[in-house]
Length: 158
Image (cartoon, rainbow, N blue to C red; front, side, top):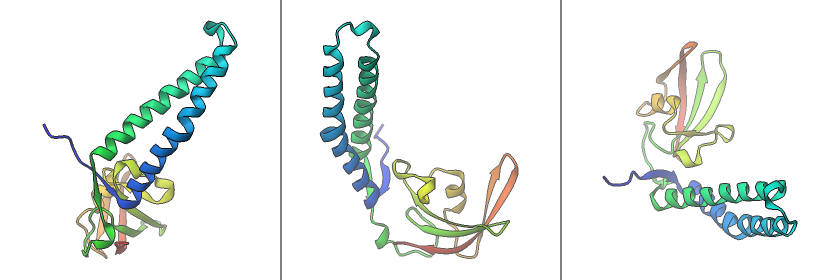
């Protein structure tokens, strides 16, 4: 079975590359130094600094592997080159919900999803409801509290 490609924008790939570089050149050497200092304090069995540094090292190494895997499987999509009037990956969509609240989201790959920054994972229920829709359409998202209806105000590719 072929490995699944990870769709992402150019900006998303650049952000992952920057994080990977920081992890390898800043965070990894810093934690190695922390481990070395903690080791010098003697008995490792009751050394909280050593345990914390080792745990942090494990997190950093795991993240390095995860980012490396995602970058190896990355399928970079140039959103600015998309010419479509329907919603596909990379679209920046302006929505209004039933209560008149306006929202602006860009549909992105999972690695770059950040709801606070308006980056919505393509696998999120709202994104799935939006895919293939046009300006003026309604998208319905099923939630535990009932259906939520969004009106699509505009679609941009930037």
